[in-house]
Image (cartoon, rainbow, N blue to C red; front, side):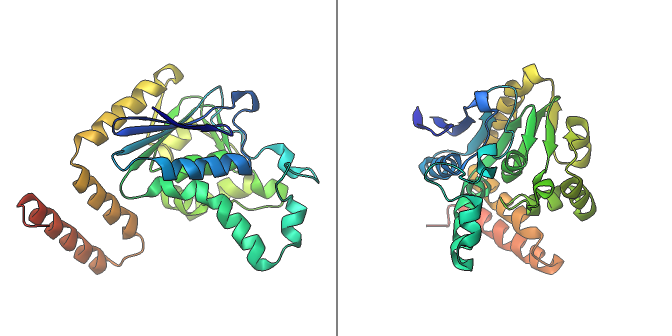
Length: 259
């Protein structure tokens, strides 16, 4: 069932699995504010019955990053240009960027597990979109790069936090500042990718991973994801307490002692 198909984004749902597809391969799935709004809308349309969300892209590239039209003086039709944004007040500029970030935030909700299926280039905003997901399965031709600093900008689409969490501060700094490509083998070795497979096997590997995720008890997955996501912000003792509380909820639920 197709729930959305607009501005380079398609959302389909098959029982407990939703698939979000970037479907503008002619432009290597380059991103724009319209695409970001469509991605944010997709997150709102995902039914509550969905447990796994797959993010994939048509064509040879996952996403080549921000559409170069953004860097022209006029920008996109009907959108504020970079110059317009810079001239706005602090609150206006903050609100604009926050609105763009909405496309990248919902993938880590505790009630779903999101998987990015990455082939070819995932550059800048494309890299950050892959980082927005919980898990990444990559084709062996996948190439990640953060190119923002070469443009005098910073990665601002929520990618810095997960990148540091995955590869550590020093490597994240080097990747972002140099703008170099991280190829699939390095991505798997450093924890950026959960799995690397030949390109022809990418869809099958994602389906197998989704099936494994769906085999687990949904409420246990939700509790476990919440525990792991919060671990970095808790002390060891706070994490122990969070584990006890989560397990108590599960034991009571399994015993039929919850409302």
